[in-house]
Length: 293
Image 1 (cartoon, helix red, strand yellow):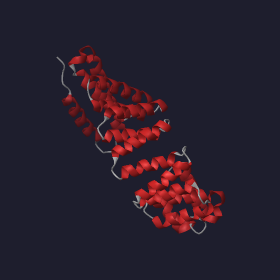
Image 2: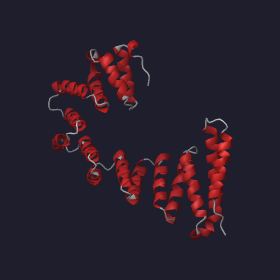
Image 3: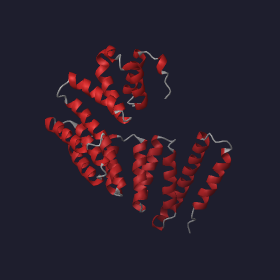
Image 4: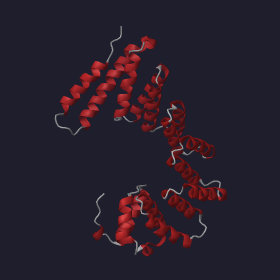
């Protein structure tokens, strides 16, 4: 993002920071640069937003390895809120950024001991385990976390990613099913679950994947990945002896998915003379088909 720092007043920067917070966008490089160039000496003018801005700058400074800025902002908050668990969390994050993992863990344990309902320090402990490459310990800790915070969708998705990294697709699918319970109308969740089931292989899993891909397309007809996934599933089923009674249906659905994917690709592509490439793609897909007996 290009911002003209010289033309922005402190109120402009305040408003920009507020906009990024409301939209959950970090823009760490811009936050740090605007803080240094404009807002650092004027932050006292921001009133009630001052503490939110300081926290925003701390996160951005840690993202960009500006530990000096993070340290200064943390000290300012510590003076105003001595003993604050929220400030302690930022101190732990600073230690984590400095790779002082044992000290960070000790601080996080203190926070958890004082507030058992605080989810943030538990997540930071999991992040530290990942940073140390201890994936199995991270999985164990995340499972323990989800026993207490079962509705945390981000945690379920993270656990899914960890299981995928270990090649445990069955447990990864279970995690995405939990996410689906909270987001039944998300085409991306249906698509992700279908991807996992297709990767697991076997007729049963491919049929389940086809169902989830179909639902993803129903929710979002422009989901190109789901269209391609549906084509692969149907092509697989059409060429399987175990489902001979459904071969024709699968062949028709595979062709429909291919036609839709081709149309979507043609309408979205900005490449010149794209029709030639689409024709080549059609030919390549056609050569993949194995005719049934």
